[in-house]
Image (cartoon, rainbow, N blue to C red; front, side, top):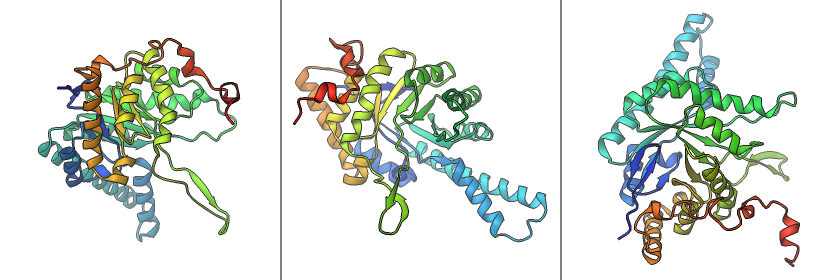
Amino acid sequence: MANLETKYLGLTLKNPIIVSSSGLTNSVEKIGKLADAGAGAVVLKSLFEEQINHEINSIIYKGEGFDYPEAADYVKGYTRDNSVADYLKVIKEAKAKYDIPIIASINCFSSDEWVDFAQQIEKAGADALELNVFVLNTDKNSGSEDYENLYVEIVSNVSKVVNIPVSVKLGLYFSNLVNVVNRLSVSGAKGVVMFNRFYEPDIDINKLALTSAEILSSPADMRRTLRWVAITSDKVHNIDISASTGVHDGAAVIKQLLAGAATVQTCSAIYKNGPKVLTQMLNELKQWMDEKGYASINDFRGLMNYSRIENPAIYERAQFMKYFSSYE
């Protein structure tokens, strides 16, 4: 019988399927349903730096008696402490009830106070910490390195003060993704998640208003991840890759493992089909492994990454017309 056990960030997971950071993982009860369905680990819904700051500013703006700096400082501290305390409570209770790794998540765009929050998260019992970092660079006078240095700075500062492994959830928008992943590994990151799914704007042409584009992913979105998992897993050896976005069935799990991923992360598939889809994915993975004669994940992980296929240039092809000119 196929053994699905795998390693990620130095942690032992009973299988490679992780439920990614979302509203699906924001309570102990929800985590329980995911664990029962077979999740190998869960990433808690992110603690948002931006959201906490918004709550602070909203309270101060609406409040009275904040003419004194001491009063405003008190409100800032109280709001931050309570937001973090609620988050820590979920970590402690989930760790006490379930035997799967609980990975905390921080959504941040600076490296200031998150060092302290990371230490509190470690003390609460989180098995690892995923840094959800994204800064949209719209400054015409700054270069790509300025943008990338922020990621390296955050990872370096957090990794120095915690003993639990740190991973980084990345977007696709880098001029040299492989170089960025390598720099992050040197700065202390034990893993990267490819790729983050961001808010995307859309335009309502009737109301002339900005709206949100489709929130959930589709299976086709996996194409954005597969190429870079295959390339990066070969080029950077001292970091684990978790493949995210577009993982909707067992076949997607298998493809990403073949490309070199240590684990996969799924979210939209569960929103669409419920936790039972995790069980279905695992059954598909087991059946495929049995049919192919693979006893463990390590028997085939990376079997089709950049260096192990006959023509690695396939992963580098980018010119649509050159390779699809015969398509009519």
